[in-house]
Amino acid sequence: MQDNDTAQGAPCAVISELEPVPVAGVVPVAQTAAAPPAHGEDFTAKLAAMQQLNARLIFMRDEQTIFEEVMTAAQSVLGYDICAVFLHDPAARALRLRAWRGYDDRVRGFSIPLEREIGLCRLAFTEDRPVYSPDVMADPNYCMADPELCSELIIPIRSRRGPIGVFDFGSRALYAFADEDIRLCCTLVDHMAISLENLRLFDELASTRDAIILGMARLAESRDGAMGGHLDRICAYSRILTEALSRQGTHARFVDEEYVETITRSAALHDIGKVGIPDEVLLKPGHLTPGEYEIMKTHAGIGGATLEEMVNRHGSFFMLKMGADIAWAHHERWDGSGYPRGLAAEAIPLSARIVAVCDVYDALTSQRIYKAAIPHDRARDLILAGAGQHFDPTVARVFTEQAGEFQRVRSRLRD
Ligand code: C2E
Ligand code: SIN
Ligand code: SIN
Ligand code: FE
Image 1 (cartoon, rainbow, N blue to C red):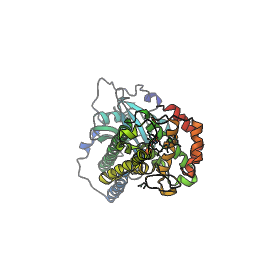
Image 2: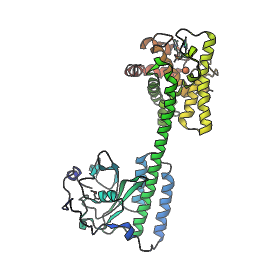
Image 3: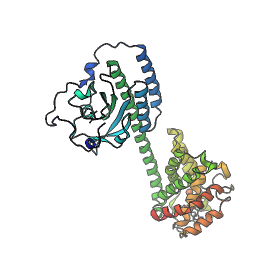
Image 4: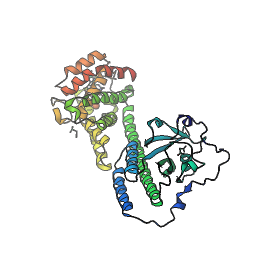
């Protein structure tokens, strides 16, 4: 790996950039791979280990874990003690180091500018082909890296749209890569590329899906013009309360990081059923008659049933399932006196018990078409007074501990 000077783009080799020299030491793999393979037991064992890795890669949900797994395989299965993953950063026009093994830790944050440098990684990326240098010091295209590095194999990581980076295998031995090793390395990198592509599609799909669902919630909300920042605040409050609950012994086992992320989004769905409430009721400036209130109360079931229907038709995923729980049960009360089902205590989904507190806090501290806002301190006291009757006592207690945070969100996200 280059030292800091080269990292900053200092000239790193004697070769003129204007005059690319045909590279003796750099052999395209397509040419080296022509000889018929003589597969030994060793090769078969390596293939089997890579097959197992492949099965694990499918389930990995973040890039860094994929990099680490593949580098572990490069070291332990293929036996290359030095390796690195560079991904293309189009904004910086550079290959950015994302993970490494066997290089000094000072390489952290290192990147290879695509415009200025020669170098094997740049070559493999820009020409979109594997580059093998069996003796880097004799290779005019080599750009000084680790002084112990003797041979290097660099393979582009390809997505459907072209190369997205390179995988760099290095060895302290000369001529360390036999033809069949090169093929194994290519296979390993291709598997990694497929996993990264899957991950990208998965993330893209998930965020599109979230955007559509949250858009639906905003649309429902937009009829009630006075409620500007309501959804954003409910989501922010829900995160605060849920994170605080996850630090409590009693709730830690229900509430993990995924739960926090999910409630932060699905809390926005709590009142989605208000789309089904006629204007005369929803937008009535004064108090509701008992009959109007009965109509109003149907919003919980309308929203819950709509989201459940989506789960049934389109398959369950956590955000929708939790959204359905929240829409159904955010007006249930701990003592069983709420609506629409009169559920009590732990029969009310935890997510709904959390959102109930957030929703009432926000309603109390906001001006509505039918009522004035009350100050933070009074709202906090009212919620505390409702602990054990309206609200889950644990959630209400954690709310009072976090009340300052709620107040900060309140003043940051105004209507
Ligand atoms: P919202 O305005 O978002 O209020 C949500 C919940 O906050 C209410 O659920 C209630 O539990 C609490 N809350 C709101 N304002 C007050 C208050 O001044 N004092 C107390 N103690 N709690 C309050 P709830 O009552 O089931 O109402 C559900 C929804 O029905 C409300 O959502 C609002 O959209 C509508 N609504 C309720 N009462 C009236 C009303 O008198 N007039 C109109 N136009 N709509 C109302
Ligand atoms: C590069 O500059 O391409 C990285 C170092 C090398 O492998 O040549
Ligand atoms: C649910 O349907 O899972 C929410 C709880 C309820 O029935 O209100
Ligand atoms: Fe509601």
